[in-house]
Image 1 (cartoon, helix red, strand yellow):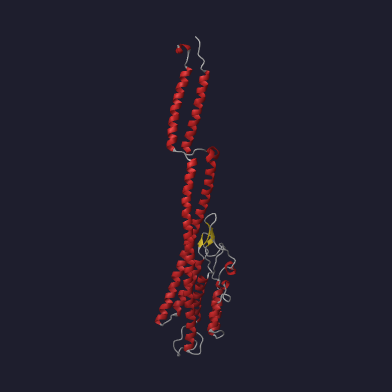
Image 2: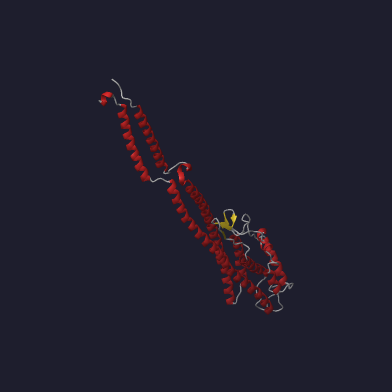
Length: 357
């Protein structure tokens, strides 16, 4: 009995089965990872598109993170400025009420002012982590400190005024002229006082930086600090307002030979400081408007980036991700082909001349 040679058919069938197994293995790997390939080189012509999309996607992620950080810091700054406004308006209201009633309680105003100044220093030293938000680019150093130099300056000026060394106009000039009462005396950091800090910006796009700089020594905050400090020191230096020519000896008032002159000098200072505070409160609006405008721009750009990220994600998915339904169909088809190939291989192996005949 002779056999029929099926070597060629067997080898061909075995090769076909191996190919099917490789295809099945590839499909199973794709199904597990949900990716078409494990290496970029295996993506063929789509590799350049997906690599560029991924690079852009990563850049957008960085910009979005930047905008979120800046957004948080602007929120903290706005909260601090809002509180400065509320507390300053409280002092402003007390001044208006007492002026309208015609009875000025210098002690209550001075006490309110002293507390407000300490509170303002805390607010202007607002931090995000270790970063001082009102320090310009000098973020590692506290922008304002109660060094005592402002009290010393004002005490000397008020004493000279009371004792007639300087007149009321000179006193007003000395605390409104920033070349006389400079930032260093007020207590601002050396970097702010020297004007050496750079602006604070955030990179929100490849070509766009948004400036959200608000410094602690801007005129609005500076004037509020000086104004409340003046009321504090006046309260400590003066015993009160001279309302009667029969006041006892030693009762310390504003300078003047008569009650009328004393009151005129005091209220000239009082009105100047009150207007000083009113103007400062108006200027605070400018700082908040700048922050609000910067925040609106930042948020708008972030929204645009989020949309763009979605588009890029779709592009990456089109190139890299599998279609689960398609893969399932292919696996099912391959399994059927493999089963058929195994059956054919078995039949070829069992071929003989007897079976053939």
